[in-house]
Image 1 (spheres, helix red, strand yellow):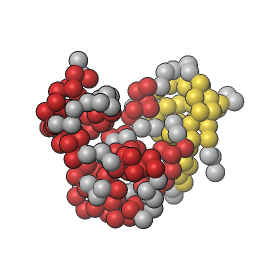
Image 2 (cartoon, one colour):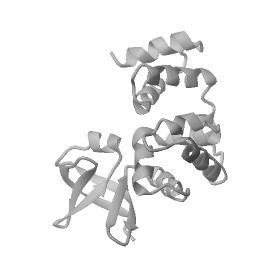
Image 3 (cartoon, helix red, strand yellow):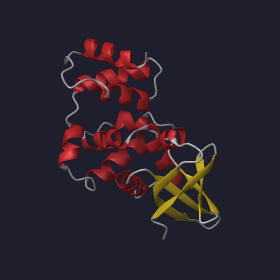
Image 4 (cartoon, rainbow, N blue to C red):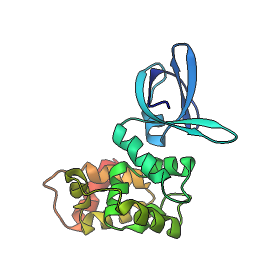
Length: 191
């Protein structure tokens, strides 16, 4: 029903932004990453998903169309509701979710609060046929076991999955391929 929303951010709430458009302030639930980067007073275009329930109507907003499409795919998984799907995209960036599905890495999804082992397996099973291995996804899936080990080490050190993934993505293309050196470089990102 509501596919996009363009307006000025007038307020940041715990899990939402209030976006004013034509004099109407709309509460839009967004990922933690988007909420943190958004600034009151700036204009923003959000790709939205409108959820109607018996007791509420909610609007969920995303920076990109592909992120919104992934959110919609997550909703198609049995047992995944709007808030849990948003929590998944708040904890993991879309590329990480796609890689986890593509490589059947249940443990990555299992790190999201509210996603247990069985739910992670359901997500992988349900989305494998829906996510086609496009060039971009094949590149994401090409992340090595070394990077998985670095990701695991960073999360064991207390960094969130999003922080660890961001540190991995910041590594130069010509970075060494051994775990210890990649971990050292990734830790340098946090300094």
